[in-house]
Length: 153
Length: 248
Image (cartoon, rainbow over all chains, first blue to last red; front, top):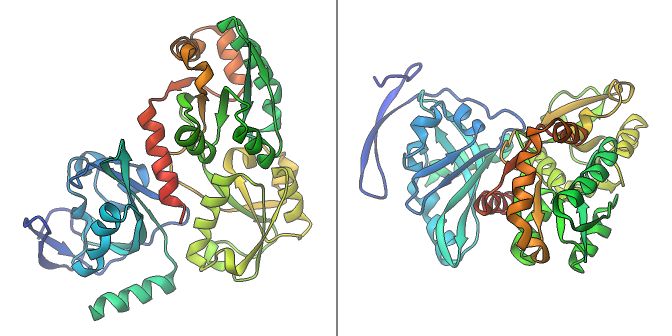
């Protein structure tokens, strides 16, 4: 069992788009996003986290120091099908517009939280310098719809 | 030449004299003439901004985006330790304690403060509420929102947190905050227009040094600031990206 994981858990090996693999331990414990919380983060062009706000730290269960310098995909929950993120890079880089979707995120303690995520490319002098993401509390109805959809993929 | 200075209309009226004192201080520091033009109407001020009437603006995050990206303004300072947070408020006797208790048909009373309204609409999303299933009446001031709630003429009011907290105790006793944003990273910012940017370094230095003298501290207090923090252009670019991200 991984340190910091709370409750009954299962072991899952995650494989990421860059070819790296990581073993994670997941539980069925949901941490509801408190009302009013907006999670903000920024990454460099390679998806490495450079800035997080306090709400991100609190909801993820990681410390700020543990998050900065890590790839953003450390938050990806194994229940999120890769296809759910398929349009992300195309939307951000090719179309130059916002990507948004309902996302189940993995906490450090193995639990999860649902968010409505929006990502935008940070363009300076026609060059992508990084990405900004904001995650907010979705309605229960939207979460249930997303959950059913992702299970069917 | 007289430079024109304005302040976002969401400033609290109790700091009105503080901004006039600030304007006088600015003239003494720079040896230039400044004219302070205050508005209580977002639309009128925006129209004046569109007509390039200002050289210095203490702007809310939403307007800062337009000023930086479309008008060539540069950010120089922001109040230390302050972030803009929004608050959804109901009448004290309403039997709702969470956003999820609100339902379609909601009557919203709001100013035209764009970032506050945007954040509050986001905070209604957990209840599946949006522009299509709510109605909004716009008022000129936050005090009028409080009146709407107390009279039962609106179900919720959209407030800037700082402004809500400055309402009188009697008014607040008849109201109840339902939810407050916790975004922590957006704030008002002081911006210089193209005609004033040749004085950027000295104005910025004077602002940052304001906290070092008793007179400066007194002036800061009259604006409810503890100090000015330096703002780099990238800090504001990040905030603008964030505002773009929120605007869906």
